[in-house]
Amino acid sequence: MDLQGCMKPKVPHIAMLIVQLIYAGMALLSKTAIAQGMSPFIFVAYRQAFATIALAPFAVFLDRKNPVSLSYNILWKIFLGSFIGITLGLNLYCYAIKYTSATFAAATTNIIPALTFVMAVISRVESLSIRQSHGMAKVLGCVISVSGALVFAFVKGPHVQFIHSSTQIHSQTTSAAKFYSKSGELVKGPLLMLLANLVWSMWYIMQSRIVKQYPAKVRLTTLQCLFSCVQSSVWAMAMERDIASWRLKWDVNLVSVIYCGVIVTAITYWLQLWAVEKKGPVFIAVFTPLSLIITATISAILWKEKLYLGSVFGAILLIGGLYSFLWGQNREAEGEKIMKHPKMDRSALHIITD
Image: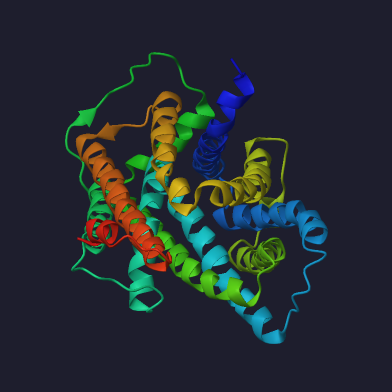
């Protein structure tokens, strides 16, 4: 048996599993560093600095033959997009995770496709046909996803203990759990996290237009990280006046910013870009709920994070809504392919659109 031949078709699946593991690690490490007292604003500034350093060599090497010019107009658009999508989005995310759990942070990312679609329809970047099955599936998926996020955030119910552990947890991780129980911040954290996802959705719409004008993707990503590093540093200096808070030591804070800056920004970018070329964008999105499952499991083991029946039901709604939306998107793409084919099969088109 040819083992290499058997494994080759599964390589994209393994790559996406690695991506979701990396995203789960991002939520967990970000939560740990910020819960131990690191300023979320300084965290973002350092993260973007490491991301810029990691991407710069690739931008020089891979895009050196790309003749795309950088005008003042496109430079301003990149600067604005960096502020809205990266600086504002990441600062909201890191500030919100201080008052909520890593599991909730991982859960709410599942509504980004739905929010992006709604904003794309409003801005007329995408069209919507509710008379066809794929259009109805996308609308239904959006409604279910957002409903699931709200249920996950605000509905508690009975405690669900699916992992029992009697081992003593390290003081660094148990200190993170203290943030979950602050009653005054039960609404603050989830609302800020949902707002961060809304900002990221807005950024995706902006990205689709910027990439058309500046198709050097690696250079574009590097520029956005650089601008975001400058913007986040100014923001952090305005919010944190104590110089001592900027000091990095050989601890989990340093590991977290390097991980989020280098591993999350650089490695996942390439893995997802490669997977899109092999399998398409829908294939990537299908794996998104895995980061929620991984994060919830690790949080329950390490931090004894409590899961409630409302959270479980909300997660089911989130995942169900995501797959409903992806199913409609996939059916719509299939219909468009048939329409463009010179020898279009009308019977197949009827099956897809009805």
